[in-house]
Structures are given as C-alpha cells and as structure tokens.
Image (tube, rainbow, N blue to C red; front, side, top):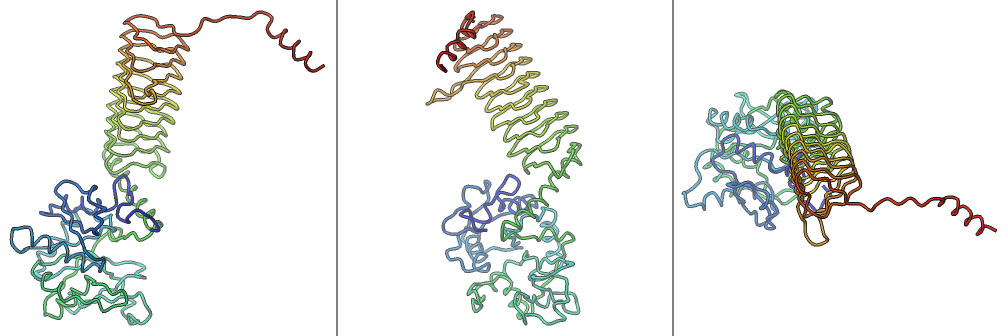
Length: 436
C-alpha cells in the first residue's frame, strides 16, 4: 500500500476494511470472531464489542496467523476448540454474510475435513488453480506465480483458490503443527494444511462462489479503488431498492452505515459520510454530510456542509453554502444562504437571513447560542455566544448580537449611519493636489 497505515485499516466506504469481513461473520451467526493482529495491536480500537483480538507474535505467514487464533480459542477455558472453523481474509472485504453462511452450510454437508472456496474466472491469471479428482473433490491447488509452477493443462483451468476456508477444528489442529516454512518466503502457508490433510486420506471439498467479486483482495491502492467502486455500487443499489431516488449513482458517495428513508432524493455530487441518518421525503442537493441526522422532509443544499452533530428536524431547510456544526434546527426552520451555524439550538419555523454567523469560540472555549421559535434574523447578523434570543424576536440587518434578546423584541446592534456630505468632491480635490 506504500502507507504508514496498516493495509486493513484503510477506509472502505466509511469503515476500516477489516470490519467488512468481521461484520459478515457476525451477521452470518458466527459464535466467536477472532481477528489476528501483530504485537503492535493496531486493530484493537476499531473492533466491535465481542470481537476478540489474537496476537501473532511473529509475522510468519497465514498458517502462523491461524495458529495464533486457535491457540487463543483453545486457551479460553472452555476446552479444546470443536466444530467448524471458518478462515476469512481481512483484505478480502466484499464477502457477504449470505456467502459466509453458505460456506458453513456447504462444509457441514460435505463431511470433508476442509472446504476450499473457489471461483471460476474468465481470466484466472495470477491465481492458484484448483485441480479436482474424479469425484469432484480438491486434489491440489497449483500456484502459478512462477514459470514452471503449473503444467499447460493446469494453466487452462479457470477455477481458482479464493483464499477462504472452512475446517473441522480437530483436522485443522492436527495439520497446523506440521506446516513447513521451506519456501522462498520462509513462511507458514495455510493452503499447505490442505495438502497435509489430503495426504492423511482426508477429503477436501470445494465450494464455488457464484459472484467472483466476493473474492477480490486488496494489495495496493489501485485494487482498493476498484473494490471501493464495487462496494459503493452495492450500497447505492441497496438504497435505491429501498425506495431512495439516487439521481446519478456514479456521482454519489454514501458510506455503508448511512440510513436513508423512502422517497428521499439524492442529487448528483452528494457525499454522505459516517452514521448519518436521513428520514423520508428529504432532498439532498450536491452537498457534504457527515454524522448528522435529518428528519422527514428536510432539504439540504446545494453546496451545504453538515458536520458531526448537526440535526435537522422535520421540514427544516439548509440552503446554498451553509455550514452546520453540532446544532439542532427545529421543525420548519430555515437557513437559506451563506451562513455558519455552530453549537446552536434553533427553534421551529425560525428563519435566519443570509450571512448569519454564530460566533461560538472565544479563543479558549466553545459556547452555545439559543435561538427561539419563529425568530426572524436579518441578513448579516452575528450572534456572539453565549447568547439567547427569545421566541418571535427579530434582528436588524448587520447586527452583532452580544446580549440576550427578549421574546418579540427587535435587536438593533450596529453603529448609527452617518452621511458625510461632499466627501467625494473633497477627496478628489486632495488627490489632485497631491498629484501636482
């Protein structure tokens, strides 16, 4: 990845890549989920509650990683691990819960010691080929990374190893100690366990993925971009099937944890991030939203920026070039143009004029502004927090409001205008004199 960030912590549509297979395993009903990490424990803070971290002391390959997980499971106090063990890859994020469940079911039905997930590709270049015996069981997996690794006949095979496995725990426990690091990389490779079990006379089954996209791995940023595009397409597709109108899915970015209600319209060039929640019948026009809440009928944009903590109640409107941060806009409230509302509570049916600013930071601390119901804010009004504006109040255009405004009052907080007669004539005469 050429990055200081561990590969599986790179973002994929709003969550670290490693959480995609973790969530798939949890949704499939896995009894326990372990994620294998290095001694640096970089993944510790991103794992959901209940997901365990197993430390691989030395980076000695996939076989060593699985051994670390088995050791932790066996040491849990419940006795030696029994039952099926599924092995997923943290850098293969598009595998879905239904496919994980299908693998577990296929393995249970096969009676095999291990089940290898495979896929049939139009272009299998670079993948290990799956060679089957006359009964359809896996005979071996032939690597193709170097010339001579596979025969011409084997290179013609289009069924490939997806790198996803199901094992009987007892069979896996017997095979792992016998893995050998006698290879060019000096590592313990999990696929060798299949060969060892086969040599023991055990059956190795294969489970074919209908959708080869589920086995796509990420090893560089080019592959990450490709996987992200497929993931985004799937997210958008899910929302559209649920009744959301996404006008141009190819020009819309929506994170995986975003929720959107029926009949909401998402216009092109909109980005919706984090755990944003959008109700029904809202309209979002080419804006950027992150970790915010929009109730039914809200309208945003174009070119609005809703930052974390922004809440728009039913029917509220945020217009062009408006930024909202950690603020609650009441039902039917409007901030139509060119404004910044930060750390504020705005009452229902309040209308804030263009260029409204809540000055929420004094250089050391953030302060909150409270604006009541049905307030009419004049254009270019600045509210210097902490300040409270009562219901039905007005502010005059150009005001800098530093004191509380009583309900129903008009706040005029600006210098009195003074017209200097003859100013232009005197100025021009002075400039002419200087030019002489």
